Image 1 (cartoon, rainbow, N blue to C red):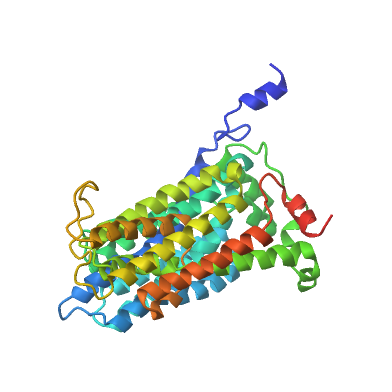
Image 2: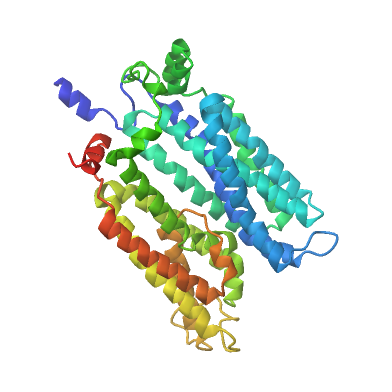
Length: 436
């Protein structure tokens, strides 16, 4: 057998010369951060209705306080992103992940012990701070410990763990009240703290600290062997982005495209859906809003995993444009549903989501309710990022129609401004933007 044949028959998930199993354990430990992140984002959806039903002396949320309870986590996440960017290069990837478990656990503990609304908001702010750190540091840690053959696979697990955390919050909120749900929120970060204590720092960060022997030991621990590991060129790890480089088309064009895509994504309304899914379904007069929220979470997890599997085949640009088109129709449909059922006594207030589709509907709202569920599911699985509180200030139908308009803008921007990057190296993408 030739060396080429041996290379082709080598298992994909095994690095050259070693088993590489520990890298999956380390990646799982780091991914518990995004799982906690998702749980914190999804927590408000079942917790808000529960808090509105709470009897004294437990705190009870007004409409205004409920809006703050869902949205304030994003303020903490913004601060956490800044803090994580500072920590990741100074404290290291591992220590940064360990540090972020503290506000996760502390935030949920404050919520659990809350007797006043300000304690609920303070706990949400703390969990948001942890979310910002985890969402930045976990992908860096995973990408730096993974060997090339599984870097894409492990990297895609970050977003999958986020939506899994959201689904976990929805499922648990179906049977748990807000206090016990907050207690459950302490479990993933606590487990992450225990596991990460046994994991090494990333080899790349150790090299930046001139600790080459420790970097080699980390590679051996994670990969089982040093074979296949390429040490970065001397000084490469210290290279940073200078402001003068923003004049280059290869820098400012992809930067502008990336920022624009995130803006369109954040204004799509997904933040309102994830934070207030159960409340939205209650507004839509669903009999079992918890079940409807769980359906959205399940669809989101399934299609996040599916998107990760087909991304390298179908291409990024096609998936972006296709998802944007369906988002336009789904948000428009849900807005139309709210408009048609507004103020009507014959709406979907007695809809049973488990009723067979073939059953004759008791009133016209039943069919509209299934239209709403389909629209919400499409909206949840096609966009998986969660930042936007703009929709909270508008009427339901106006909010979804506005989101639909932003989705139209996102589709047009994708079609005319976003190039396809499938199968291209970073160098080839840079050359494309610079016109070479």
